Length: 208
Image (tube, rainbow, N blue to C red; front, side, top):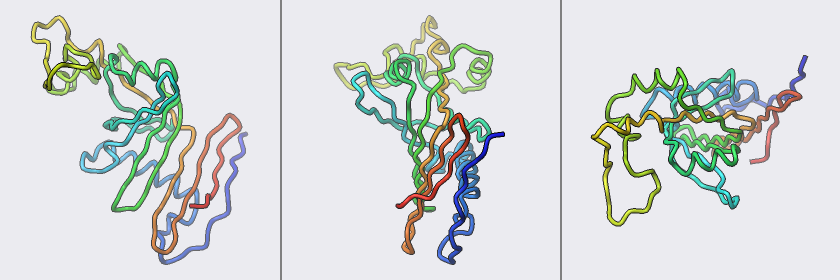
């Protein structure tokens, strides 16, 4: 049986939400908030920042829309176009990160992990069929995302029908291996680190 390393709880203070006194409840609160971010379009967590690595090793950041959260599998999901540079970068190097900030709650999450790309599966077909036409049109654009063009342009959808968009529709799954949690407070910030390895899970308080 895998042993989990658990740090001692901090002393409870009226200045902090009670769930932020123990690492186990902090971890649960993270996944609860991320799950809510999938369904609440007005939540800041619905549009996190996603980071990948270019071939030269330099970081590349962009905003994505969170489409799925599986706490049991530690997996976060968003959609992309397989013609995009991020898809090419993830094909070359699956290491990636995701950043969330919730201003009202004064919480920052920094997640790292490895990506799996999903295309042309039964699941992607089901999701594609449920998408409205305006969402599908994002993948029917003739020009690949990131292509330099001579003038400003809106979506030039392929109305001829020879490019239905589904062939470029991709689900990106980030399998989380580390989470850095930060709570900002005038009474003193709190920070915690969570990591998952082959030997089990590690949890620790961290100096903010």
